[in-house]
Image 1 (cartoon, rainbow, N blue to C red):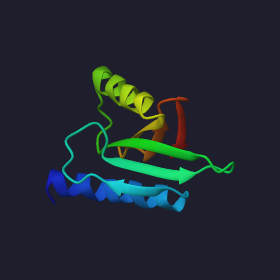
Image 2 (image 1 turned 120 degrees about the vertical axis):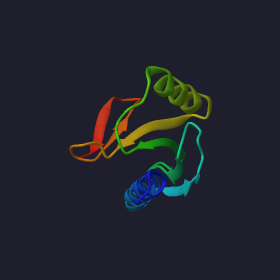
Image 3 (image 1 turned 30 degrees about the vertical axis):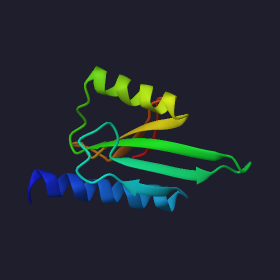
Length: 103
């Protein structure tokens, strides 16, 4: 399995997880950009909520990459997530609140 196929598989795993949590998710295949996934859902009050997700097999984001993702999220009023498969458990980290959503 190539690095690309492992990464693409992990992005699809994250996409399914978010869809199960009520998000409509679009995967940016071969994005090489800030976000690998973009999600949207309606809040309980009827307002739209948007998220940008950066997925990594090995949880290595530079401080600049994190800052760029947060800046993009702020520009779009989105929530920034980091998703990692890492050597240990999978996790989804909300950068805005610095809380782990899934392990």
